[in-house]
Image 1 (tube, helix red, strand yellow):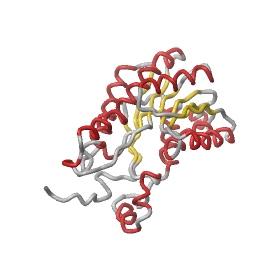
Image 2: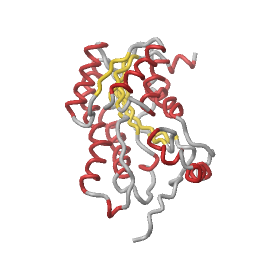
Image 3: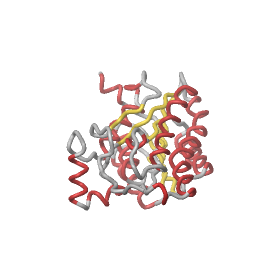
Image 4: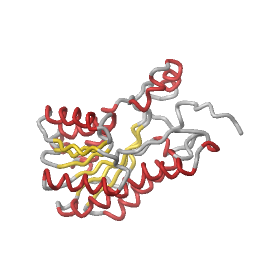
Length: 262
């Protein structure tokens, strides 16, 4: 049956930034279709809540709290997967983020941090995971990019550039790791998470964003989780090097940052 192609039974996935929002939703969704998960984020209490949701879905979760911005932290995630579950099949590079700001207010440190947090982390975890994915005959790597990495707008010289780099890293790794490991990305649009609280709590900004989105709504984390299940599962076995836009149909920024001309 076609539904069997979306089954992840007994697979093991690492998901970064999994304490809340998109990462937490992906971890729970993977559990619901049969996977065990290794989840990492800064806040242990949040991870434990996600682990409880995974357990309620009938699967196991290994919690790895800490700063995931270093290669050492990524080594800990991979080792925990091997120690706890004895295998690794899926990697979701979800950790990332950076605040938009005017170009002349963007410091070198802020720019470098955006690249390190959004791109270098994905490079490190993927490189560390590859030998273990190959040991299982292959696997799937999913990078969580952003719609703002697909088109330009004011205020995103750091974050937008970093997410654009992650998109291109995805395509390069798909070439490097074929045919055994598939590498794809998801480019979310505006998704209702805590990162969007400043918009969701302001009716004027929220309505502006909705009206500028062809599907006339703000996305929910389950929209992204469903795409991740597809890319992790045999349903996408003939897909690599692609970016799936889950963005409500936007082709430009759907919120004016109100950054004035210089």
